[in-house]
Length: 475
Image (cartoon, rainbow, N blue to C red; front, side, top):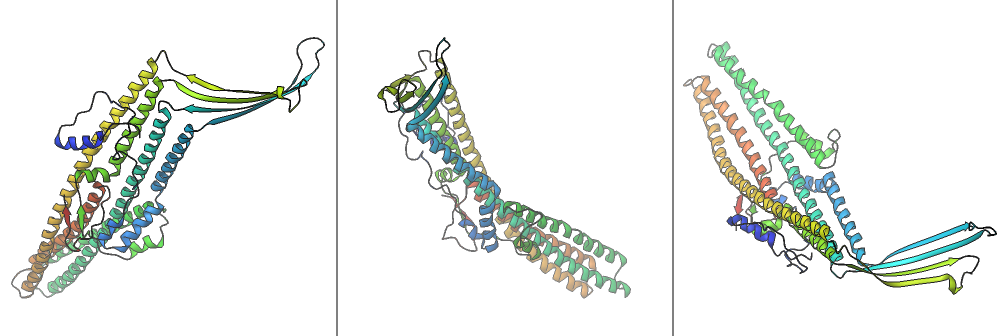
């Protein structure tokens, strides 16, 4: 964290919005410490209490189970441990390094009259690099940014896993609700068909009325397997998300299919916040930010190669043969002193490496800006879709209520002989369509709430949320 590219990426995000972003032709870095805003995040874990706003204990239990057992999250956690181990390894570069050697030899010189001799030699050496030009410090900073990037990647996966778990659970409940609507309408249509057959026998109905009623009834029945398959598919996806085999789910998942439930609906406030809030919240943006810091640190480490590396070395050695004994001072030797290693005077390769590092930093900045642009688009789309679906759902609720009243009136007029059964069939078809559309809209509203959650990087819970008035707050 030695690079002084102050607020480049944060400023870039706000510049994108105002349409005045420009990428510098050359990234300039030096050894100053950046602002605290460009530092390792301490809140890598993400808050899943937002799901309480759906008021469905099964949903929150499933998400908790997925976050505990999902295999993608286990792999991401392992990547974090790898990054932490690499950072710990890099920290050791500030310390000394040692080496030990030992050698035994039995032989004779290739001259006449020489006896066979035995000798034993050993040595121990220590070296410590004096980090005069902050090469090691920059490399350590790069590994620390690697930890941040791995943590944010894990957090991003956590948001996705929670969202996908909720999405598949809601898909299962949505399929069950639409299945229930279809079954209820099929039962009503079957009763009407039985009535028509009776009326046909008594001469009060026609064969045309009967066949029309039968066609509507069979069409409704044909939709049932599709909803059942959708529920089963969602259960299989939930099994994978919670670390289970789809062909051997636990009792909880089996119970979800066997016992239907209503569609959970989001009831609360979705806090979009300011642009800066979103930038600090979304893990993909924070990961891209960390990758910029990592590359700037590596660029600084590359620049340090323009200067010599100075090390302090200490060597102790001993040799024992037939001319001395263990403990004899003549068998011991030592050496201490500095050493200098420099890539110069021809530094063309070093300068080429610097150009490569600078180009990579520019690429990371461009990737960051692209991530911010994509995030802004996703948030705008998610919020628009959610608000529009809420409005659509309100109209469909009124349409379904009107369709039921129309069916009651049509049935009454048919019983009184004022209209034929065609009006009843049309009213039944309208009720089925309206209730199915309403169930689908309730499902879509919850889906769009989840999309907003993911677009905002995992929004938090607002205590002042009204339990029955879904809204969106934009600051």
